[in-house]
Length: 384
Image 1 (cartoon, rainbow, N blue to C red):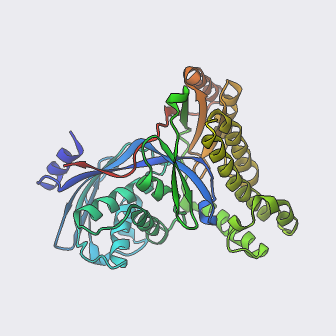
Image 2: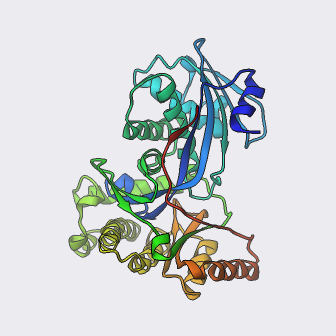
Image 3: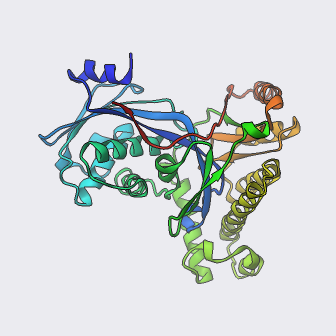
């Protein structure tokens, strides 16, 4: 059955609308968004889809077709950050309702939501941001709030930061809300200025593969927060507002001022990854899509060695792909599992995929999922 049909069976009436918001892969610029830096994500075809109706009685009912369990029923005016009743997946849409009301949108008096998603969870593809953005987009439309896409992204981030308790930056929600088909999104996370950069791989005979290692991670376990705190410590030690202000030309001098080896590694990664975003944009503007490959691989080395957020499965995917003709590859997302991206000639995609699958089998790892990342549209209304 369709999402709308499942909603009607669940709640006894047709939904007011059906909405979608995609997951994302980040082409380049990792752990830079909470450092006021640069990122370059693109939206995936995989998306969270929500059938939604308004309610006027203050009740918020949430249901997921992807998770065992019944309807989670809450009061919109009693939502509390990190409460036991909103643990797990329900915290993301509930957090959006809470954030909307916290920011004065008390006309959001409740809703019925049924959610289904094709974004793999725990794969570093922003399944949580897709849930937040589809909820925000739907409620904005149904309640006529008049919020812009960047404002919806910020609400999603607030929900994840304050309600769920994960100190993420703004990239994931902005990608889900604002990306356009056939483009990568260059986002300056300091002033939130955006530029849609053409990224038509098929016209160049190329493919960008996603290798989902199926190794799950939980960014709420403290590792992400520890690196964020370390970056903030580095900025304080260097006397700058954020690591973005160090600048690549002054990186070596800045590193000499830092005594803590761990903080030095974090600073080196963030400042150099900001520079890599600028390098990728320069290549794409020049029409040299293949030329971004080595930059992707350099970014992976930095994430592996300086930030230390990779894992054996991600390293194997990157090394195997590059050894079998890929132009470049790197892990994407928060790390500790999740996914890698691989830039390949379209004619080589099958051979590279086969090599990665065989390498995982030989290493005794669970078989990864491999699929193309096709630059897709951001949040949208599906029906009616």
